[in-house]
Length: 216
Image (cartoon, rainbow, N blue to C red; front, side, top):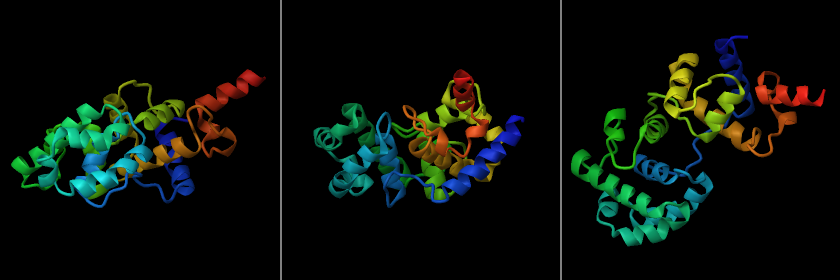
């Protein structure tokens, strides 16, 4: 089976298993998702969702956050880790939105990526989930790990993994693909305790085949 055939099977099976797959960062506006995604770096979505209600209640708009004292922001987001740098970034991001974009989250990969604290991954999250624009594939730790196990890529960097996935899957699937792989990684193919007996991809997974060989 070649990678193209395998990619089609992966998408079809995961779509059936996780028809409700979605972004698990709680948000109501593009601004909220942008800030939440910056905070999610090296942090779980669950933890981010615990701090953002107070953050957005205190600083509900780019204008409010742009004028925030760093110490006040740090105190709210402390539990997300790397809070000093994250506080600096989200305040800087809000300031850039106010000064360069009339307080509106831009809808292009270039303008988003130019904001403080925003890389290609964050930009893709916002574009896909808020504007229905699939400019690329979001590659996080789950996507990286699972696409390696499934043999969809041998690359090690998110940028190169993304390129491989963009070649294997049609553009209209890029946004949902990330959600499906992340749901799979959080609910079935859990890093430390993969539930292979419940996995709909077990027959095309390299990890599972290695486990079977080791038992024989």
